[in-house]
Length: 512
Image 1 (cartoon, helix red, strand yellow):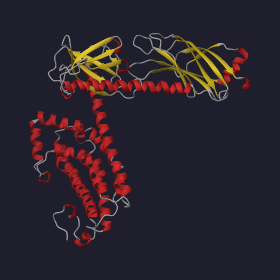
Image 2 (cartoon, rainbow, N blue to C red):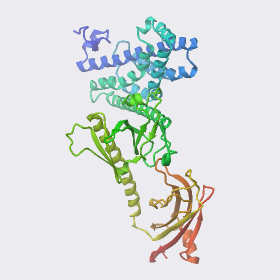
Image 3 (cartoon, rainbow, N blue to C red):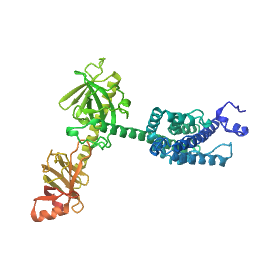
Image 4 (cartoon, one colour):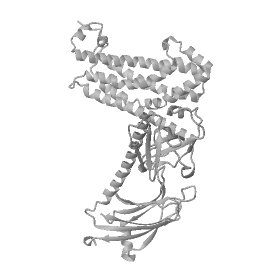
């Protein structure tokens, strides 16, 4: 006979039905009951926030509409998501009979978790919401008293609004655990086993998406802080920190903190991005070393560039010759210079060295793969019917991209997957490349030579300076009358610019 002390059995009032089940099924049903019961409690809490907190706060006029939106974000959308899930759970429970076993639940969870995308937005804004609420209660004692009074409602059970605002993230991270408990007590041959696996995968993926959104939100805010607090001069005067990197996708802040020059003990503030390391300094010492304090909205520190950014594909980071040394030093080599830097602790030194090394390796590996892909495409010589020899001689009257009225232009030549890139020529609108390459021809009437000119940018994607295309059939026709002559080609999709190229098509004997 069952006992009332086993929580996995509390869902069932029919002791006879309970006694006919295997111990595994009893636990399975207990965990299903736990999921449904906690979902009911959670939806009640979501609705409580609207009734007990949101409504009086809105009616009081103590906060602007923007502040209300920043604190509660899309709370009503969360209620809609979970009300829908709870309704489906209750309907499934009623189908089998109240207090009776639930045969299938995985299909339902998998389907409803697919509609939980509003949690991504809410959770990514949660830190800002908590910060705003804390600032308001700290700076406005009357608002703090107002919230305390509102929270005396018996339904709150003594919990403040800040605790309720944490519940969506807590609930979201609990779904994988709840589903995993059910799955672990579901036999492999049970009809619910595969649907539960899919539901677990969906719940874990949703948590991953939320965590990534939170990281992206924090990264965007820190990049904005850096833009507003670092004075960019000289070659990086127009650097936009939130822009895409040149070849690594979105710019990400990987690490930051206070470092010191070893000889002078000069205080530096370092920012490690996924494409470069930036060393800055402040005219006034800053009391805190923590990144959280540094990026606080209250921080009014202004930083200046100490050295030109060190691109991570050009750096080598090393520990000191004596790794057992208690001095938390490390070396960063960049082209022909070595920077010896000191951290505030050995653990922080380890963090800096590991993060710089990992970011540098990723940058170099990305460039390597790009080069290998281009080389492999150029090496495909099979089944060719001829080759096209190309010399890009020069370009004239290109569009200016830099503040000094110049550009750093280079050209990219492609034919299908085959690709060649010239070197950039610095500070000119009339570059002379004299760049040679050859393409293997597969089909005279299908192959097209494409020439695109770009402005080389270190900190963001290269700017487009124009494009022109020449079908191989046109080259063949021109050569029959003019031979391998130099041609001037207008660049399209831009207001100005042209390139001079020499084209020599050589077809193998069988195709002439």
